[in-house]
Image (cartoon, rainbow, N blue to C red; front, side, top):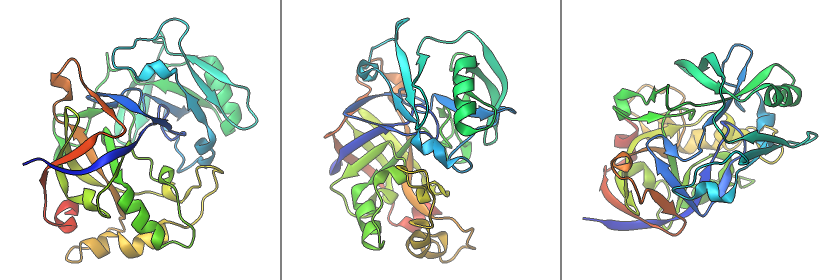
Length: 305
């Protein structure tokens, strides 16, 4: 039985992996995540991903896309651009038209493949900003597939996100964490795609199947957090919080007392879209949409196991 367990408070996409996100009123859903989400990535001279874990100043790179890019049926024209800004840098414009050239041997975690090359101007801009040779590459779904971990989500795919196409967090979880912190942190520390309000702290841990608008999502794995939540997204400067506090509240040692701890901390639930590839239209979610829980587990320990 469908039970309303909250509403969509915010929607975020991150067009360039590890750079600043865009807050939206609505977003079209694809089988690899929200449209434009992590479609681009910055790579080093060896084609390896560059993220805030190594270069925290990526947090200061702002992305702007045409507002109509988030309409369901919109397609870019020859004068459609992604606009990129960073402190001390001229504005960079990257055409949304598909590039012609490919870069071989691009890697993100344990995936290796080819990607579209956004060219010398973008490469020079990023190399100057980061301070080492870098290129901007774009995922090419026409020639590449990046499968999600079959142990958790067999038969699904993503682009340049870390593991899975969607990440959901509740406002209740953020509020509960902030009550334990000397200085509250904003939601951008956790880089979700969907922020849900109106449910209790960490209730999303339990959600195995939810429905938002016409789309059904499956909760496949709790999100194990790296150091990025410690990086202030307004300054690019790292501290120790909120991860130090999360070790006390949300570590595997706390949530899974019967298992050998691996030093993990968990905030948020990774999702895949169960039915978005079977419909031609209506794959959109909007701020204010109700979240209906169709199926859930009984405990966080069960979800994290």
